[in-house]
Image (cartoon, rainbow, N blue to C red; front, side):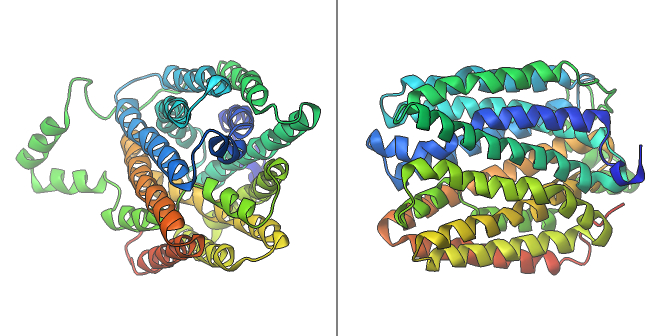
Length: 404
């Protein structure tokens, strides 16, 4: 493979296409949820709770599936099952009649996401050149965001054809979801390095570590994600509330409901166009610095959202906010995956997803409460402050992992 594409193997490309179609399906739905939820009698608080709990559910299952991924030889069945579950349940939003129906569908949808993510990310890590790990993850995330750009455009086109037919859009989201599942069967399974026998438990692992030699204890510590890295990620996610609240902010600035999918598309077009190149840059210049820069840019964007007062501010800020993903998403995963041996990557990535999801749950509920009971500007300002704090914590870690 040419040197400029060393991070993009056949599996990485195919898994990127899977995420492309999976996100087309998902993002035909997500930009319409705030307006749909309001029509059902919900608000910012309900939106924050639904999205926060849904993502926390996904993160719990990402952790559990990550542990299991280190104990099995085949990763693809878990990925297929997760994508299939989400593809089947997502269109059920078409028959939702109350906010709790949306809550139930979103949670089951996110269970599917949780089941598939850690095994898929481990498969990605094993399919890429170690020196180009951030590039591979960022390419994958870029394809994900390309799907997230196409999905709202499809939703907007369908709403132009059938004005107000949100439920029809939700039902048609089943088609790209099915294509994502079908593409998975072209991905090549890889032999995995298993961490321990299937019957082992956390308690047994702890006993084994306590009973081992100092050298074994040192090796065990080296097989875990550095706590200070996870701590910085957790602080950032405390301020990283659901992006659905940004759509609510745009709606409050005067963006019409019919244009919300287009605004969401702008965000993901920027993400898709920049993620791969910014991931390659992180591999070359340093993943820790790239991640800190992404968190600092996030803080700046949230300050902008807090101070915004016109419709054009929303369009400009969504475009600027799109750069955050390229600087952070692939880089975070690459830092975590490269900090542990290959046989421990499933658990490490699962733990990373669990920490991120717990932070997102707290962030989304907290932001929704502050949004409704104080002001949108206060909620956004809090997110900006926590992101800036996380960047400082990350830069203060002299032992943080660097590219291999």
